[in-house]
Image (cartoon, rainbow, N blue to C red; front, side, top):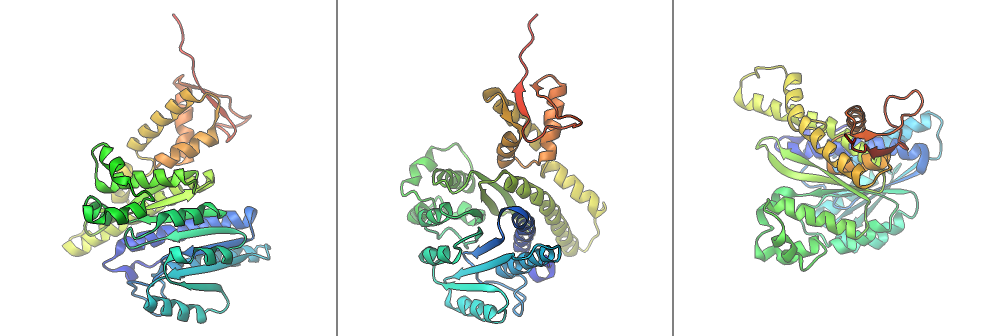
Length: 383
């Protein structure tokens, strides 16, 4: 069952976060169980529970959302004739009171394979790795700030077969990262004690965008993922960025699913923000809700005109430098950087083929490139 907004009053940004987690896990699990592996391990590295409204079922906590989502997928596929599917849940939490609640929650659900680890995530990596001994592992890393020893976490992620979703706490980073008093902790977060020099050498920008860029660079350097794509989640009541969800994956399919889910979640974020404004003002909106959602997402959402222009620029530049690149390869690389989907990239390639800027052969009977289609820049015509 997807998260319910009424359980997130005053922390609606967590509703958007959990909605994204719910929808991504659902798509990933269906794909995985129908091809790659019969075993899905879900690791919640900072499980809580923290601020929850549903203290009976914890339906507004990430670990409960994961159980509901993955078990629903597993049951649906078993009903479709795919037996032998297994989901393991590995929850880690350092706060003793929260650990006790997790253990009680697990004891009430003996039908599920739940294991609770007490203490810091970084101190439990070997045990969690052993408890995810086979199958695909999805790790949800949702700290309350940047108190993470990333070098050890990177080692853990690199040696697993799977993906991770990292909640980058943009608001806290933006507010504090430039202060010398937190330099050491930021260094642990970035797995780079000497991070300050690189930070200060970067072009002008907010603290959070620069730290995000450094973090992604360190993740790539540590080989924890081939693709690192992210989306911003805003505080609906204040309309400013609260967090960014970063997906780390080695799969182009994962990048496509991320952008597809982002497109859906962006619409729900606008709906949530609009409902709050209406409630607080006591006045109805001038335009229907669907029109407001369409206007705002067309302005800066997945596939908006600005992002189409950005994606076009990257695609043409990449094809020029790497002639013969496969459409699937360039699609994943563009989607990693730009909030667009494969459907948008199909239109971009066809439009630029028609304009004489790209050349490629279309598969028989197809109107768009296949994943294997080789793209090349058109050669300039002489006089």
